[in-house]
Length: 637
Image 1 (cartoon, rainbow, N blue to C red):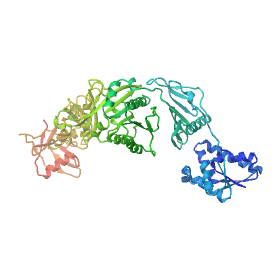
Image 2 (cartoon, rainbow, N blue to C red):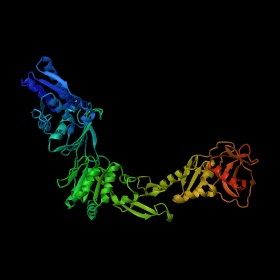
Image 3 (cartoon, rainbow, N blue to C red):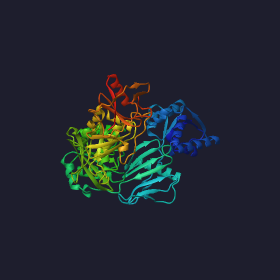
Image 4 (tube, rainbow, N blue to C red):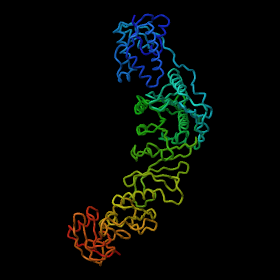
């Protein structure tokens, strides 16, 4: 008699069991290589079933050596693709082929495998599967007290937990004895098995090295090598269940939610109580006759049975969103909104008319809103999110009202700088605390007054942004260091190296005028030597006489007036444009074309001014020469 055991029968030890009771004495046990390959793969993944199966094969080898049975290994090992598709029956098909090819009886604890084999005319002996690792209760529940939010276990370390009230959590050791590798493997297997067997639990995610389990109100992450460097179990549960009445601004928030469908972001740091508040909002909306659903991965919000909790359909939240639009909820609680795809799904559903409440990790209330910047069009943000609630230590700390208005941003005065501005106002005081708008082709978030926690008396938020933008614009044309000093909201002084004066100002002041026009701020250009608290004298340039160095004070110069200066004949070499000034070594002079200011320079030791070709100054000078304009040099005033 030939017997072919499949993987389930080998793992359960059903072959050796029958050999020992005499049922299989003298039989030939034909083990498919597909079974060996599957067991090896399971053992490599740290699964106890793989190790149990290999122990059974060792017992069968002992029976062969005793002459009790004949043992043969036949067939092909499964490929990587076949092992990855084991759940679809690829490995089972290889095992059935071995049974059919050896005129053998298939021994199996897998009911599906047994029925398929019978349908194909293969003799089958079906045995009930062994209940492995059956537990009635969560084996780590003993670590939880009334004040325990999470338990953290890892092989070779002491068990720890986060305990205390919201906002006052402490990460403490709860047992002095380190947890062994064997104990961690036992706990991990028991947790996963319990989730599979119990109607109170399910496995949210299962991948190589990681299982996410939801059992009752516990969310448990079980990590194994090679994903982690050791077996680790992290179990989290909510320690409070609240209603909207338990929070500050309860009356105002109730009225706001019931007024119309809203787009709300609930933000805060990990463990602050965001999900607890989201649960309270969901229950309130449900009690007020709104159809409420949730989108979660994993599904761990503690809500009533009337609120259906949806996971990621096919692993994608956009599929869940498509399904929900057919269900037509009034409000959807999205926990958690984290990746770009999450924000896009949140935005699409909100624009479809669904009220949305999203849970977002953020260290400040404004940070939650900023996470939308760059992910959706700026002007659409107030239509997607009109309310931001920031939770800290389990309490509502800040509520923001988000609106849009076409106006001149705070701190600017020129009427032609009006643009769409997102205003973020404190819900309690009605006072705007931030403005978000496009400034010089960039989206900026500007704190108003002291909204960002800065010290009173320092420059305003718009001032800081303006200073950064001025510095960026000047650096784009200057070669040396740049310092910016703001003089109120409409004026700034820029300090640059002497050699950069002409470059920054440009021909006839054209370049600096363009920058002023873009930024809406008057800019006075000076050298570092004129900066009372700055770097001192400007840089020395790169050649005799400097590289178009300048000491022009107060900006652009302009027409000379009646002072005509000395006419010079420039010489153009391969590397420089040379102006022979004929004396005045060390003096500062202005170079002009037909009386129009070009740049300021210092006369070198050879009585010359040299300008490196390729620079902006040299290009303007060469252009003037090509146009046959008269080049003059006059002492700088």
